[in-house]
Image 1 (cartoon, rainbow, N blue to C red):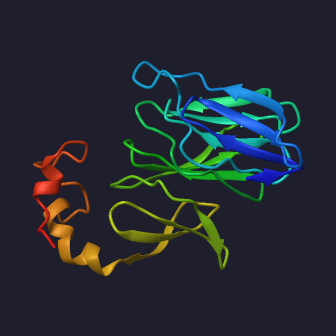
Image 2: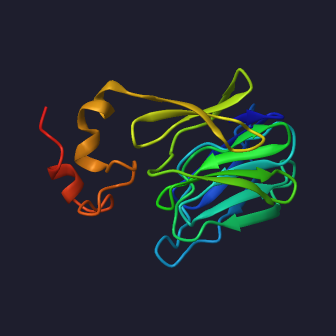
Length: 196
């Protein structure tokens, strides 16, 4: 992303770089904490900012808040056992993003990272969130698009993709949870789907 004449680029080396848009010169860099299983703390998606600070997630299970001007850390919050892949979304001084393995969607205060609400889902959210008609809109790995109230976290509506409808029962039970005989992190979920 580009902000205040800075190009902000995350990398699989676990660094977020701020480069001058005109010269490409390094202004600052910030190193993620890392984790036992992902010691580099790889950054897979874009950063987000309105003014200051800048926010981004990492494969070390943390979401970070940095000072945009200096690159110094302001806060980080760890989601135990789950990458933060999705690009954070800022709306009215709150931060919204989905997680990986813990299948959660969060609303946080942007100043301190305090949790406002969480929404339990049944699959991962890697994509970005947007606002439409005063609702948060985001997609989930279960083949659904959700329309959520930003203040309460209540799901107002959802839309299921046609391919998801065709194959839903192969992965999910009647309560929309991943079937007990399926390991979404293993290989057997692929064998449960019909070949095209």
